Length: 472
Length: 112
Image (cartoon, rainbow over all chains, first blue to last red; front, side, top):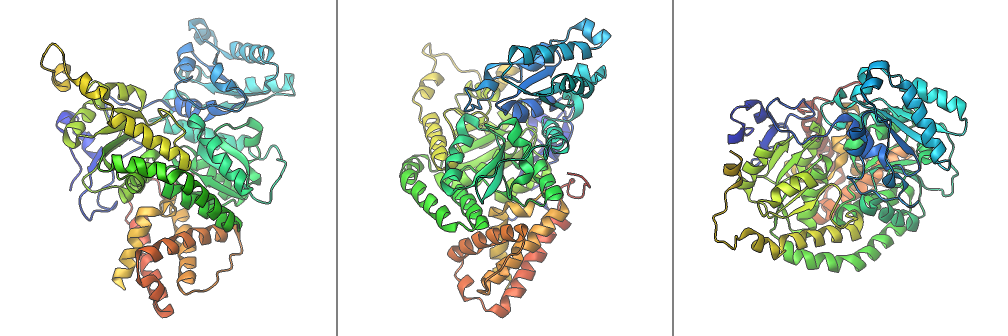
């Protein structure tokens, strides 16, 4: 089966390279969607910017650091509070937002003085906080503000503070993926190895690529505690800034989100010889496999098997209750990238759900290799999907539920198709054994919501206008 | 023999993230490392990993062999003399699909 040119893309035929319909007996050598490539002019992309990838996804999760955004106020507001990653210190990083609030005069005359003043002001206002991320944005990068020099001056004036600079303006890459990359490499270049951890267990690891969405990290931490494994650093769910400086001392790197955080795991392997274990933290079967491999690595298989048995006994009956009621449900996944390959088989194996279409905002070709190898035949695999494509794909595959973000979610709700928040979750956590029951519950509540039928009927008896027709 | 290679290849494609590491050299290391231990386990040897990387390869190999034991009857019956042939066939297939003919344009980038 060739790549697919949808009807809505007739004027942008380049989109054909980005949409694949898997045929029987095809592998990833036959076709692979072009990805991590510049958005085609004319397509209404759902992507975020590179700065967003650094700040919203990774840096902004760190629980004890000020996130100083050197740019106009909107760059700060639009990357604050749109993801729910709590922390065990009162959610400091979610309560506040910081910006240098650049105006026209600062752009004309330079913003370094304003940045320096803002950094001092923030530390003065929050004297208990001694750590900071500073981000450039498009305008401050374009005018050439030297944020590293400013950070250095502040650290000389305040020896008890530590500042990490992220020079990743929105335009620096084709999507938020570039921001993940810049922050990963910057952190290992400048911060890893600058502090030594207190070792409290013979078994140590980093857990990389989990951002404590609605408590994912904290749920998984209960497993590591029960296994007696010390997590040196979570990159970056519920993470403390200084813990992340100690990542070089772990014996094992366990990676969940390989797209946002695989870079630092690769560098830790290359520079410090720490092996990298990729696992899937979503799904019963996958989670058990991950725990089993970690247990085997450390030579504590018995503990791992005991944990798996306890969790299965507690949660499997609940999962099976939902599986009975969800089997055969058709699901679409329109998220960032990795959740496509994390979820496509786990929902099928654990819940009997069939994934019929998937779209990735910022996945690379590696992500499409993974998902096409795992995914079903007859399923659409889309890179950087746009709204009109979503409408057409919905007509083609008729999903019962769509896992996606709030913006696209509100769109599909207008078609009376339920959506579950695939980025920030509806009622998570979704990772781990308990988490996957939460995911199943939210999917069940979405698919079987009686309001859907009511919402689809007009009490005046008026004919519903199809969405595409309404848009023309 | 071909069927056995097909079985293992299908399992690896569906389940194993280590085959899709970021770069060619990572994929090569993982394929070589894990399959070496898979071979030992299929021969009922007792692998003795010496490095952290080998311990991880063994952890991946154990899950693979245990899963395949449940899927395929022939796993427990395979003769040691046939194991090397099956592993070599699987390795060649994985290298071909995930490295040699891969359409992933980032595989040979010199940096991560």
